Image (cartoon, rainbow, N blue to C red):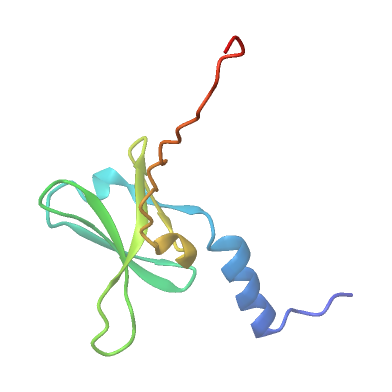
Length: 111
């Protein structure tokens, strides 16, 4: 016989195992025109998926705090399907570092 998990361990498991991946939301045809939006709930968090004027699909997490601005969520469109990633570690915008050219001084063996 197993005991049900307590609330704290359930939240920890949800945060580590389930939120760290990409999750299917809907087909792109659900928001065909610029300005269209779609409201979904992913793991208990409301997420708004919109199509902007440039025809790009974007997703935002709706914060429940007063005066809270919507937090961007990683969003990808693959094969006509919309996917979001709620992992907060992935929300940082990291600029890839350009590799610094290294100069290697070589002396020929015949010298």
